[in-house]
Length: 369
Image (cartoon, rainbow, N blue to C red; front, side, top):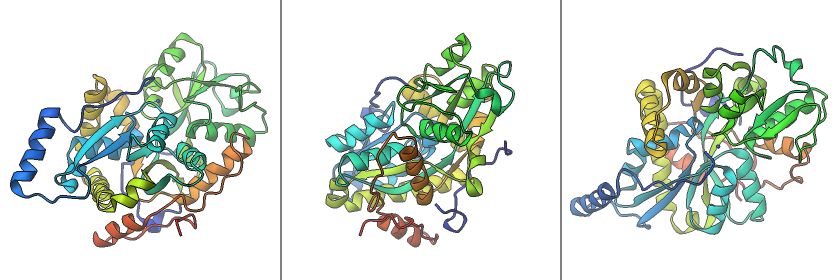
């Protein structure tokens, strides 16, 4: 496993490329504060955009650091002026995709596999990836008494968050590259892949019903705090040690009708990633405060400290790595070969980056025409 690295904004020249129920946050700060902010904006003549509100979805995971910090610090809200944010916290990708495809969500922070599935299910008509957000933050952690080497995984029970989710696809691909066989639907085979909600995975580990897990942060570090050890950091499996773990996606309808609002959100995410890079300790505390506000309990230092170091925030969507993850899902027979042409629209992001004096980023040939 490579040494932990601090969070940093990935430059384009350096890159090529889940809580069991749906939680609905009350908004940025309290409802009263939201109304006060709107009144203050009107009174001061703050800029008015084409939508009165924007509904933004995210997960209570540290791999969604841009959303957590951007909302907590008001960095996204500041760019939106009089347009109010309605944040919504989701348990898993399918729920967020359903909200986007169903019209109850406008913009979402989400992993690559749900992004691909949502794009394909809508027949390329409803979603666009408009920015990157994070890389890394995924580990294989195991019971060190039962598993000491990677070869020891054979015959063991290893959890992933959900069938076909980003970590599940990566683990199935890793198993296949070992030459082992697993049925992707049932998870049965040379390794038992046990699809387990991230919230209950630590209890399953403590009870001995699983021997390890391939999971995102902070679940991985929670397991380590309960006695697990890190056997593999997924970062080490990727060229340049970079792969997309979180994207920013938008409803095509909202993008078409409110490009000024989408651009403002992207200005906020770029500012947020800059702030995280410049203030890593403050950003870590801010993300923890947002997790506590959403879930009622902050993470212990022994969990958040190692977890935070393994995640890199990035404006770049690392598009080439999304294509690789899609190919893995096809190889595992979880999806048919998708046509990903048009899944990206980085026009507004590159506009924002150029205005900020930053290098533009690539869609790896998968951009909207």
